[in-house]
Length: 145
Image (cartoon, rainbow, N blue to C red; front, side, top):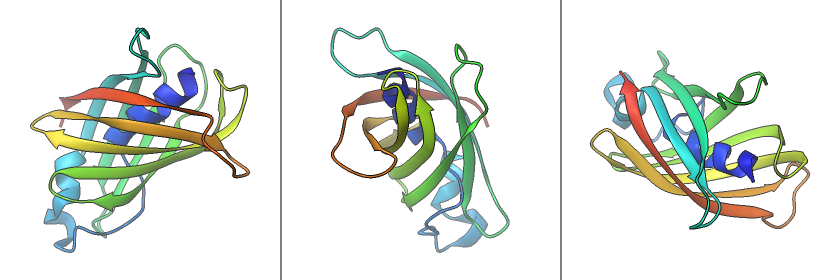
């Protein structure tokens, strides 16, 4: 469960991926650069799994980032931007070992930007492919540019 929440929160940050910001470094990717902190929720009763995403815009205009979970001593997880627009971001996170699913997973997040908040949904699947094994929502806020 925590892995999914973590992955969902990652929607706030990105790694090399889709360069939909055709405007290069000044494109929409800039809106998602910075440090984001948030929580991922797998149900309404869930108190949420905390996460942090650090992202930046590379010279080629792509958004690059990593996801970490403050409560888990694991290396940063790569986040790849798949779609970037002025108001929405789709990320792919992983693969990584999910502490909640107890297996390697890939997570896809879809987030909507509102000022310094990025909120949305996530879906976790086994890294080797297959049906979703977890889904939920995430809420995050930019804490540093």
